[in-house]
Image (cartoon, rainbow, N blue to C red; front, side, top):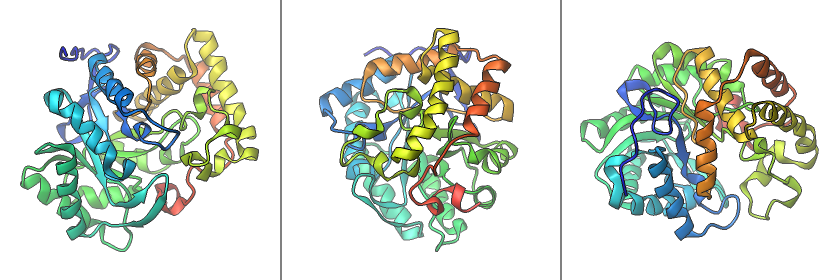
Length: 342
């Protein structure tokens, strides 16, 4: 397959952006968790086609984790890497023990576990180096300096190029940055998940750390295509408070606001939700690279349309106001995300 185009203008499908620590990625990323059975069954052949289409379209920043599908997501992505390793900026994560569908049983951040986890990920991914290695969640039993120190050793050994942190507080980010440069913070951030803007985002901006919002489409809710009453028995979203029947009904007002702006711009709700994040990055002074996931190639093309979408101050005012009325926590256990520890 042909190499993805390079367009550094910031609005084309192949545009790039620099996160922290000199790490350059595609302007829009791809979240691999959607290619595991967290939101329903997945066809592995279709999943691989979707990954190839993403890279063809210029979405070369691919994000996974060792717990997605119990390691099967890394194994799936390894099939892409066999043909296109040089075209991909690869991110994976460690620390959570368990799976999204069966539940998490622990968080490990001790140095010994860091060393074990990276070897397992490298083997499953079939690669010699990981471009961005994240601590997936904070193990509060272990000093963050120990965890990041062990991660920094992986950089010295050439197994990892850059370090990232997921769902850390502002203080944890500052403490980690004193040990080794941090390229990116990954946390949930979207029109209906804005808690990170209080402390984490300003800290990242001050430290020169990029931000990688996961679930930028609200786990699909902001697209207006999710019927919460019809979620499957094993759908990961059943565990999230804001997807409960009462909360979801109240939160429909957020979707309505997004759709109203989309209608004005002849765009889709997904494109508006992503464009809002790009606008927030500009307003708050840091590079923002959302990583929406999907099982369908057509959704990748749709999401890329957000790069050329301009939201006016009036549009932003409508979307900002809608976010103030969100009902329910974004996590089943808020202490496992920055929201519960700030």
